[in-house]
Image (cartoon, rainbow, N blue to C red; front, side):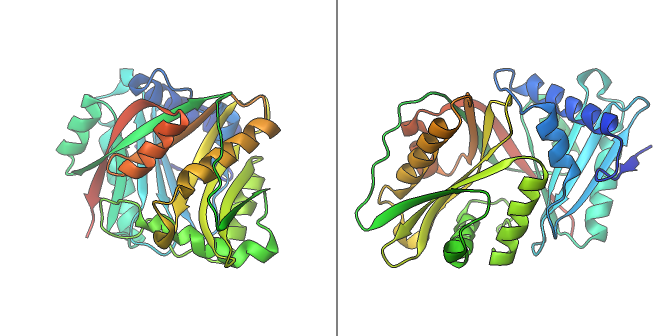
Length: 314
């Protein structure tokens, strides 16, 4: 039986156990990758960004599997994660969680759900349950300290901040965030609703509520337009793993070296401010050859390859 979990109010011990299941499942596919610590994982489940809808379900007593359904606002898609402890697989737990999650997504008006898998067993499960296979996702890591030499591009300047976006850049930065919707998707639609200054402020507040630090580096054209950006999310010490969030360059400013510059600038400032940081993680669609080339040039190495899947609900 699937039991719904309100992660905003759930017992701390249950959330820690759910995140440990996720860690075990991830390590089974990518043993060389260090997942973020438990506090980071619990905080990420506990705090729901404004406007986003979430559903979590668990099975077993004690709990041996869980599902997380993440539904951003303004788009017909969502993301689904199902984790079952390896020794408890092939007993119907994953199928029960999947059925509940798909039913909830349909009820909430979603037409597609996406997810990823990384091993043959999960490939068989998704194929057997009607998912359509999508593109590959490449996970990468950069071990710090790294040799980084930011190379400025004439006509632009780099600006960095931690936490809240400066008021004078807020509108231009929000507009620049929409460049991420050019990223490849399996459903042919946008990944997120349009970014607005209000949505940027909501994101900043959610990260702060989790006890994490949002670090942004942006490239600003002489015209005042924000044309490139990258984000890092950093947990307090002793956590030494840093996660990359969005990185994007506006369409009219690509192929000028801005992606390399903005990422190198961001990583150099991270190293200066947080010398305790040891690893920066990121991921790219396998079809995003340009950003993969940028990351490899900066010293990132591939750690695992995942495959996306799509469940069509309409």
